[in-house]
Image 1 (cartoon, rainbow, N blue to C red):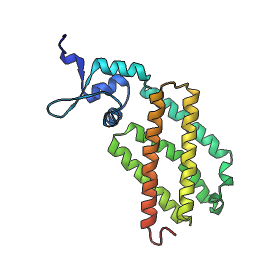
Image 2 (image 1 turned 120 degrees about the horizontal axis):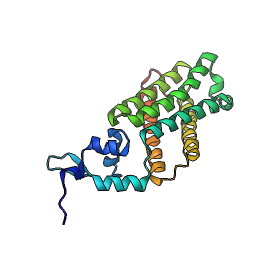
Image 3 (image 1 turned 90 degrees about the vertical axis):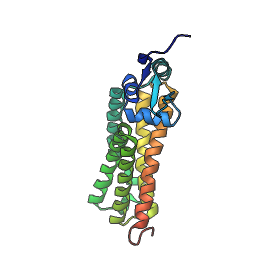
Image 4 (image 1 turned 45 degrees about the vertical axis):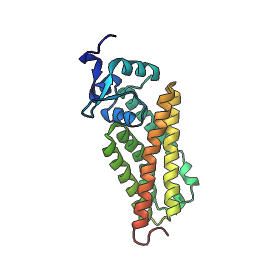
Length: 211
């Protein structure tokens, strides 16, 4: 049997460079059991070069530049959909004054920008970002007199817009990798679940919250 050489093994950062993604993404994939890795006696992750190259080829991984380009396209889709007047049909939106409406229109774009940072950040930093956005949604809803149910409806509206924008971009880019699609949904779910949890916690802890 042919012996492994030092060049056959990659550190986490080297595997990330080979795949064209952030090291935090490789860490998350490893934790989820998505990507093959090995442990040294000291507990460090090591990746066999041949396995990573084969995995990359089978999954058709999107490069960092491709992801960035797709996020920019999704942002344009978000601006278009929000400007088409769909918001006018939302009951909670009709309770807002013009300043509040502008804040919510802006929040739809900020939600997508937050997702972009969530995807490119280390796991802990991404979690903090999601929790901050959830807190802002809760405080904004309280400030403009929305009930907890209406606050949730407002968030769901923009979350669904976010998902729709990402679907449109993936379809337009003809992304064929099942892993790319499933990874996208897992990340959006992780991101938006944390936002919703923070929204509920902050709204409920606010004076007179949860009305």
